Length: 235
Image 1 (cartoon, helix red, strand yellow):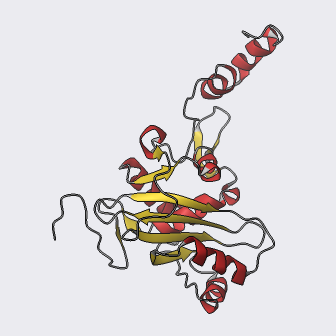
Image 2: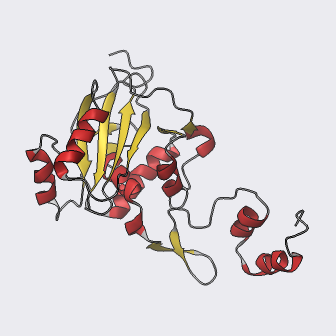
Image 3: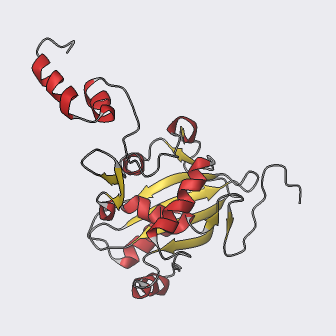
């Protein structure tokens, strides 16, 4: 309303009908976490960081999460510092439709050239084995996620975020948009329910949870048994 062309009546109307967080964000320019945000444990101030490198250092361990689908295939690339155990989300892959499995694999190999890929995880645990086999046939083995249920996958990622163990380069705009927009459905009183709002549209977050749910949040050790050194671990 500092803009004389903006109607005060519209401002007051919005104040009267919108949730406090939404009115504050859209009409007052103040960031307040939306009600029902699934990953409210993600601290952008601490974990959204400027890009440190285009490709991870050669000694970093690389992990890739995948979400399948011909229309909206997605992948998230993470590098783990072996000295600290911290993960760095460094590349998002959301090419849209039109690429074949072979073309996806060639791009994945290009992105990870020079790095050791420890594991690739993705897809529904029980119904997408055929798709995983198709990637394996082209030289990019993808394993099923450890956990079947979305809730458990999200729980593990939530915990990693709570412990600030996942740093995200601030130029991963699509991923960050998904992270800050993925919410629970709100009821008539704007209280969160146990249902996700348009969960099927968050492809990068699906790729992330398939992969990162495989890690024990307290130690960031993958279930496959690959041990990574933590800060202060001299072994």
